[in-house]
Length: 166
Image 1: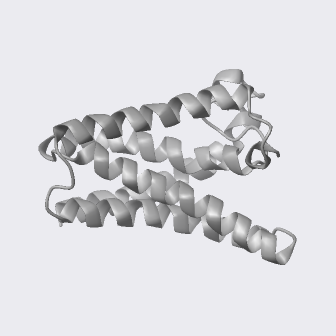
Image 2 (image 1 turned 90 degrees about the vertical axis):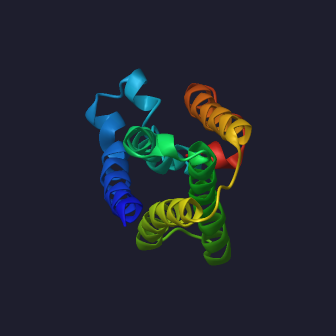
């Protein structure tokens, strides 16, 4: 029950903080530092930050309250974050590719459902027997740090791919 409450709190935190990050770049006067953590344009890549950064931050909060006891904590969080980011990309490109245009309400639904997926996957994996050992946990933490580097580097120097066009 304790972990379930954390995941409900995480859902709310990620949702609220993610919405704030959507507007933070413009509200900050387009601060370069704020841009590393918030959407600087309307590309799908930049919108992935709206789930990633709040989930990443909340994971560290969780870690200090109960995650230290979980051998596979960062492995679980990496799987949860990756699942939510993958859902955003697949859902957006599938529906917009079929429709030929974007629908704002569907985009909002995709964001909300991605936050739900993140927390649901995390909750379910933490309820299972240990997913990974300590070395897998360390590798998963490194993967999360690679996401951090990609979001920071590709904010200012995006590759010439459609996911970065906004």
